[in-house]
Length: 457
Image 1 (cartoon, helix red, strand yellow):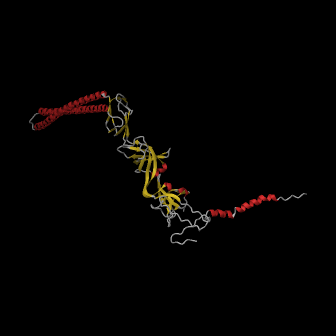
Image 2: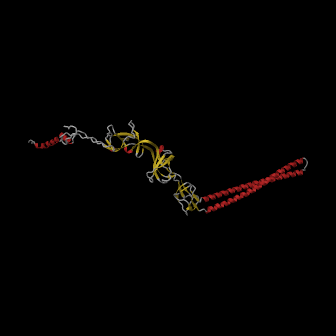
Image 3: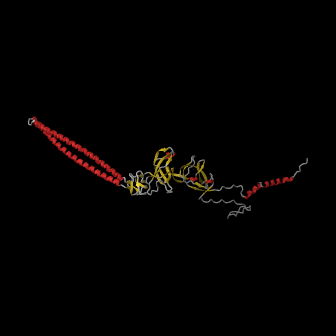
């Protein structure tokens, strides 16, 4: 077998590669460090620019959001009481009227004639009563005269009986006296009966007079119904009739709404019932008046819950204003203030961060040397609104925040606890003096000594 010859040329590439690795070893790193000047010194972290604010002392409220449409609580459709053609129109839409004001008039010739006939019938009935009363008075006068006559005849009969006992008069004279007395009694009873008949006649004619008066009132009422009147005080919002048109019973000729009795009736979820009660203040706004809030008060809370929607009806009365900016039909949104706190510490919501649902903020820690750092501080939230949140100290004995604390608001995305910061508005820090280079060193000129100081060698 022939031996394989040794070929040293194949080791040349390997030797070349090992030489390159040795050249890039500690010596190369030292050279790189030499280029950086002081390679053994770590670079100092750059201070992060932040913006900080002081917490405010203010007021917050716990709110229950509501939405609804404005309606007038006092409103009424004005219905004609009789059919008829409109002959006069006294008020139109947009006008404010008092209760009882005549809005329109209907044709009334028939009702006028009926009223006049009822007046005549009443006059006739009154005349009949007067005549019957006169006859009654005359009959009573006759009864009074016969009463006197009867008393005289009674006395005469008594004397006749006495004289008959004394044998002064005969039996025939006594009988005549008795007959005269009995006739007077019969005549008196007849007159009394006539008086009772006349009293009944007066009573009957008085009833007829009362019936005639009632018919006159009915006729006058039907005539009055030809005038369409306002039933409440308010503003005419709808008018459905004009002069010459026929008004029909049961169809509203006008609609009146009291714009000083505006309410909203929102339905509140059942779970919020514990916060809802009468007298709570309310604030609402609408798109027609942006930026303006209108106040109100809860005046009614229903005593039952809608089983279908699980909500409870409430009624909020809005405070009336002279300029009447709100109108029925407007859509408003707002809140019921269920609780209010004042003189509390408010944190901007933008400053809050969360760690597993535990809120915290970064505050500026000036430290003893005056170099500010960011300090992580846990907090608890109280009442809140879209911009602020009530500050409550976190559990665990951490020192509470005060109004003098500096809450970091901008620059939170890169902050960690203890990070060096520079607060916007603070004076710029003085730059540190660079280390002196020895004379003749590479890359560093010789530093000249200050006046009066010996030069370093």
